[in-house]
Image: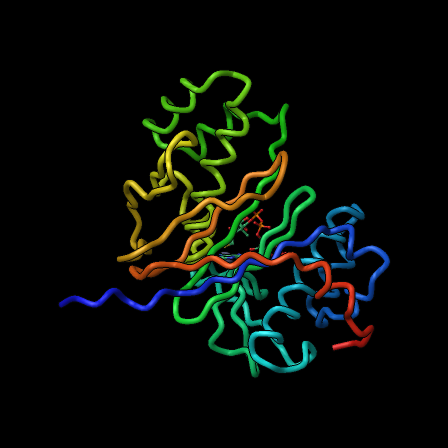
Length: 250
Ligand SMILES: CC(C)(COP(=O)(O)OP(=O)(O)OC[C@H]1O[C@@H](n2cnc3c(N)ncnc32)[C@H](O)[C@@H]1OP(=O)(O)O)[C@@H](O)C(=O)NCCC(=O)NCCS
Ligand SMILES: [Zn+2]
């Protein structure tokens, strides 16, 4: 008898970036993160960044059973030779071994963590008025483009961001990011259950699980887990975690 593989549990923590404003969250960032945080000119971008990175540290600390100040992140690109650290974050210190992905857009911040399988999470604010035609040329395959053109105009922008979030969650799980090319992976359309249809890239994994997440009104979100096993997604509201932070420096 073939036994089903043990499921991979992936926790997804959701937060409102407004929590970053008055709270002690920027104090939870490490030096590199604080430098980047200070470079944002728009308060909304700054708050999304602070909430996302503080939440990542708090979630990893909770999983690892250590203090948030002990959690470090190393960044891995592997696709270019830009000297400064960038790319997929990997927990280090007591949180080493956890798989992590971070995303922030509009009014939503999310952090996904798992053990034993790489994860990628992506949330996108549905912004009407963006140059969807131009973005679709860049991000979609010919067949996806044709399918999107058939979506009634009122749902086309949201449909585009469903495609985008599914593709980017996959590319964030592998660590390729946009350098992998959004058009290199073909996914099912907004009217269909999330699925990978084809993936033409040297970084394409053997097994992948893809699901949509409910990010609330005007947002689309997806989660990818690089495993052939079933995936249990456990979603959490991070408000309490973010609002009971002691205001200490890392
Ligand atoms: C970063 C990226 C993967 C996602 O971008 P996005 O949808 O605008 O933003 P999201 O909020 O969903 O995700 C951003 C987070 O993904 C993580 N990330 C960055 N690069 C990543 C990668 N290659 N793989 C997985 N995760 C990555 C970081 O934690 C980042 O958080 P930060 O920007 O607050 O530091 C995409 O913009 C990208 O690939 N950019 C790199 C383009 C580039 O500069 N290429 C040249 C150097 S490789
Ligand atoms: Zn790079």
